[in-house]
Length: 68
Image (tube, rainbow, N blue to C red):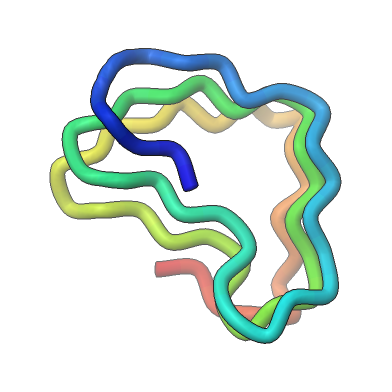
């Protein structure tokens, strides 16, 4: 989970095979996602309503789970 506000960089993480959610972007956070792979979850990516992430094109967020 990326939370606590601010604009952290989340880079080169491989997250897979969890039953729950792979990556969560919390409220009021504006991370930059760079070269991450998020696959094989019930929900691959969840973004809070007040979050404003920048998701670079080099991320792999698979379609095998939902994106919320």
